[in-house]
Image (cartoon, rainbow, N blue to C red; front, side):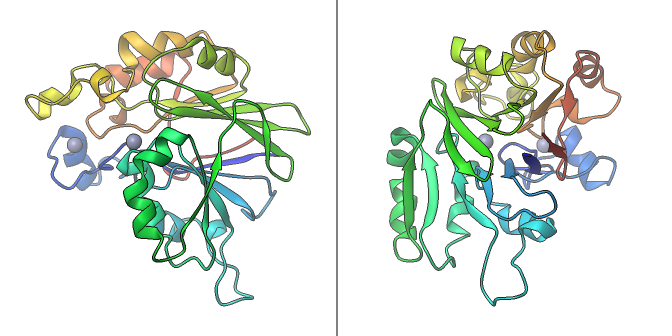
Length: 282
Ligand SMILES: [Zn+2]
Ligand SMILES: [Zn+2]
């Protein structure tokens, strides 16, 4: 089996974001919608336990996410230990990599799978961690390689990031985690069509969404995120996957507000909106 657990479903900044007074952030502070931490997903093979868990991205909220997830906490039979086996990075964004620094108390190097480009962009972080546990880099591959137990994984290369596809070797079922997507490539379409469960980039509803709260802000496409409207919605709608879930959702995104027409449109397309703690077993 593959256990996929959403540790954080928000894009960089989280919900609410410290300096943001958009409708969603105000609603989250008022307890009208649930706060969400920054994007990270835990993958493990165990039925009950999270032993040998891998994280897709390590957000600045990681320590809090571990304390919120019993299965990611250390066992009590030894003073220092962790079920976290390592991290898979989709790209070098701060909200995906800063959590590595927060794992610095580890007694052996952190195992991190990433592309050469991501590794090069994180040289600054590598040099900070070198004074603590250090990093053991591993290369990602577009061919399946063993992750643990009965799970294999591969990287689906995209223009500015990678997505990860996971294979349950026992059942042949596959899951796709694509929290940072700038473009619908042929590779990504194929991987999406083959997957039973898909976690997809839900950062922005529209291309100019951020400019409404911050004049002059870059557009979604300039930030390498394909918007939902006019972008991923029609793509996901026609896929055969059993579950399709938007994650890595920016706090400005109207799909976060239950009852909004944008949320309704997503739901009518058969797509779910992720929340912290959502778990799927495949
Ligand atoms: Zn991000
Ligand atoms: Zn906001």
